[in-house]
Image (cartoon, rainbow, N blue to C red; front, side):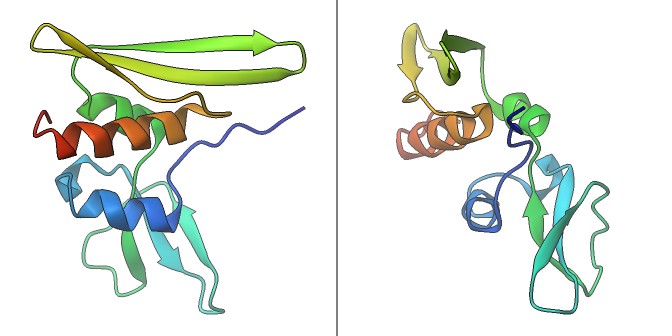
Length: 116
């Protein structure tokens, strides 16, 4: 059984921290002391081990305006796409193998268009 990506990567999280309010992150990336970060489900602001905020799928969907999360099954492959509706227009992500990446792409696109 395939594992579905549940939260943003450290790279995605750092980029989102430039765009979204840090309070919208519901997780955090912290150092394990061995040079490999791990995601913690409870963000503790000001923790010296905290590297950056981290967004779960639910948190990402929470920052989007009216949206439609679409899932398409192609035999043994599943693809996700998100469509948002802003100011009587719609914007869509590309198809991804997980909804987190679809949300991430769309948030970047909406930010570029000043629609967040």
